[in-house]
Length: 166
Image (cartoon, rainbow, N blue to C red; front, top):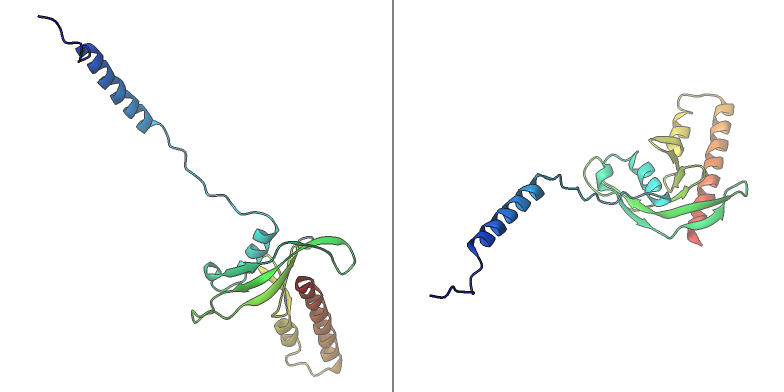
């Protein structure tokens, strides 16, 4: 009786099964590389991070960004400006509405339409803080200095926000 040539030799089949089993074990024992999501970086990410650092609910922040703009600062030095709007939730859980901002890359400062000048985690200067500094003051000099500071802050923020209009 002639041997059938349709079926491979039994030793070959068992060798194939053992090889498959070993390769499955080896591949499952090897550490799998975790696919990491790309971390956003650059001026736009810096601006978002600074703004989120002062928000009540940073996870609710929504941003609309314009393309980066090459410009100059108040002293005429070249800089890059990130312009856009942000919206976030307040203490009551409602969105407050979009607010314009400009981020000066050189000074790492955000200037927003709330008359706030922000560096990471800190409102450096704001209209509210200037007004609070006059509370209880009876001196005309205190009010004059506060008014001058407010005018300077307003001019600086207007300067940066107009960079975003053109």
